[in-house]
Image (cartoon, rainbow, N blue to C red):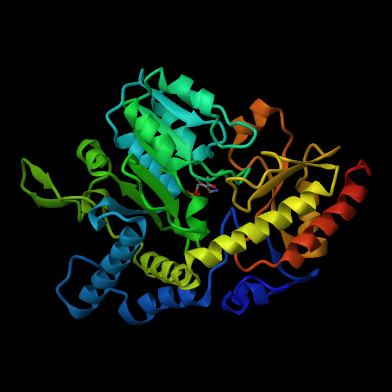
Length: 403
Ligand code: PMP
């Protein structure tokens, strides 16, 4: 069987051979591969435009500015929001830091954070405020009972993980943010993993939502941060400079309207060109096809893992509310990094080992380090089967044979 849509030829890295044979890239939760159209779009900027945006009246500057703003408008349309609410950042981490540092919060204010949150979604708050963990249930990023108990403590901010980069579990963002808003909290959503599987329509109770282009076929160094109007009113930009003010004299300055007040200095223009091409590529595939592909990959992952008693799947074996990101721990193997290395070097399989920047989740549940297998739309079922068959051999060799 081939990938759901015949698109492997669009990804130059997939033509690459490694010592062990064809490359099997299953590290998509860390970053995705890029199609040629994204690489070309970035080259077009440097080859034939290369000018700065928003500041010049010449043809090249106007052309770059127009494309830059077109991409913003397109992303805003996909999110279902006005383009003034869409800020370009460098990545998810940058977006969450912008919100955590700009909100008027006191050190005594409470911020609720899911236990499975990526370090990027938890550390910026832990620096500034008191924090409380939202427990993950076995089958969801947030346990409903824990959520309600924490809301009763009136947190100022509730952070949510739209899709966990450890378990692949997704959260019901609309419902959870509505409850958090009712309890008087600001709502901040980490959509780094979710965005690759389709940009969400932003619900009215979401105040901030961040994602990175590089996980959804786009380039590194460019991200998106949605901000609600009510949050824009309260948020201090934090970093100021060229492009952020309408006017300045020696005594005062007046901030520009959003999103520009949050985008100081020359941005990653080629990155925005690349992100635009990535969104166009994903739109070309279509949400239905993407969802079908995700379901097929998830079923294959879980079926393969279930058949192996030496593996424990973090987050359980249910397919419900889940995307194809699978982390397993291996019986008798406290640290699977040697296995990840051998998967790469002897079988051509690229995946990741460790704690995936979600160490509190591992520590609380007492899990040893995991191995994460995260396919994406260009992966085939055979590649996943190949990875698990390789794991059998390596576990036998390196894991002391415990099955
Ligand atoms: N949140 C989640 C759930 C992630 O998976 C990641 C990336 N692994 C991040 C945040 C951080 O993304 P970035 O490094 O692009 O800022």
